[in-house]
Amino acid sequence: MAKKNPTTEMPEFYSDVVKSLQSALSPSPMIAPQVEQFWNTQENILNEAEAYTRHWFERRHEATRTAMLAARKSTTGEKGAPGDAMQTIADWQRHSMERMVEDAHEWLNMITRCANYVSQSELEIAEAAKKTAEKAVKSAKSEPV
Image 1: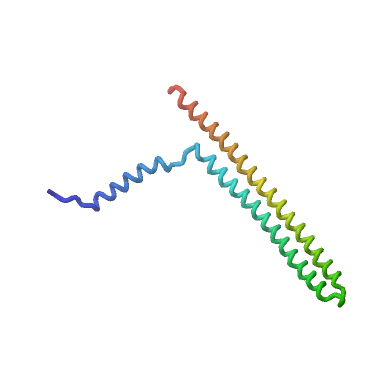
Image 2: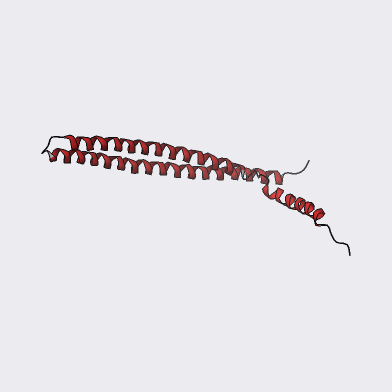
């Protein structure tokens, strides 16, 4: 009995695997709108996140600068005026709370816009898939000439 040469069988095996995967991996007209919308939605969400973080860092820089000014003012004031130092720190804390509220407000707005992008994208994908399916059904029902 002759032995089979494994090196001659492997290329044929790989060829069969590639052929079977080609149909599964070939782009489908039903998938094209989904891919396009997915990446458009990703781009929109990234833009929103970038804007939010830029504003967040601006507020943190402002908090740091005003903290340094408050620390300087509260430690270099007149001796025996602790009330002024406490008022300076209280003012800084109030402004910090305002910045934190602005963070939360902007965060909520960003999340709302991102959720809107996703839901809008889903609607557009469904509409595009419906149109593609209708075209496919219409062409399948057509009579050959």
